[in-house]
Image (cartoon, rainbow, N blue to C red):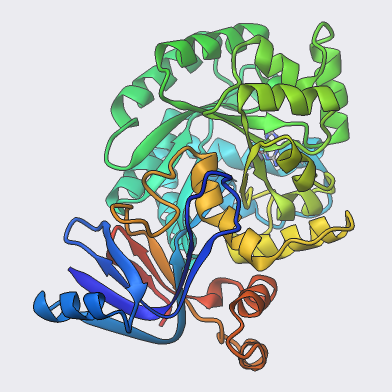
Length: 434
Ligand code: GUN
Ligand code: ZN
């Protein structure tokens, strides 16, 4: 076993599933067992914990001026878009055509995918992200590259091959039959391997024919425990396009619903411009939303209504949506989330923000029995955060005078990759800043 001493915060599961129950130890200890699972969380001065540390001779690592929290969870991003992050001047549909599609074409080459997968996962770990739901390209080899590297790093990752059989360049389209067969083969190989889960990934309604959506539904029926991930109601031109392509459907969400592509394991990126009927249909199906603040601002898509989603009791995770999003850092993403909520006349506390990026994300992915907090038996994915990473952050953190809500808020607004001192995957250190 191993023990880690620092300021520690996580969020307890409670029946309301909100963020109202942070567990905070100004001087805490986290004990991890040989299997890389959480053994115990407590105060350093706790007598019983002290006795266990001594009697079992558990080695103790002390992190001075650091905060330990669960690993961050990014519920939506695109591995092949790593190199087009920060591409100028477009909104969604022209951004896809001008930057995304040409770049995704390169992933036909497995070697290229392998090189980019190394860079991609290193970037996740540098930013303290320990779990992510990831899009590949239409090429099965992109998913092979992605899952191979995730498996090597022993990360808990979801992902899948993009399905597209229209409205994209020829070099990026498959067919309903190929989408089915290639996904089926990838599911068989990767779903449940180590800590990996498969997510069937139709890109979005405009790039799949009705025949492909039917094939997607068949895949989901035959593999009831895999996930589905797609995009929904991100951009106004996109929504008009969906209306024109699917005139008999009530609305955008109804297209997915009609094909049986909604439910508790179905993850919808963006969901910005929903009608009341769509909110209710999402609730009725217990579908999940990925809130992508940096992307929604960068692509000029709109302001996600987090409070409306919560009023409808929807599960929401936070996501970078790289390369539409502008950072791999979930901390920077939370900073933009705060501003998105501010523009709607409300606030997002740091406690709620870090809840959403940890246990909230785990709940969104239905993985809260494995990751997201430090309950006994959970997988020990955690980060060691440096709240004093820069001179200004040190000044601000000192000024907060050990008020944890204030310290975390300054971290959420000022922090980035420099804030991540170390990242642990199942009890093993996988990244060290210094
Ligand atoms: N909608 C369809 N494809 C994409 C994509 O790659 N990124 C974003 N942000 N939205 C999409
Ligand atoms: Zn996306």
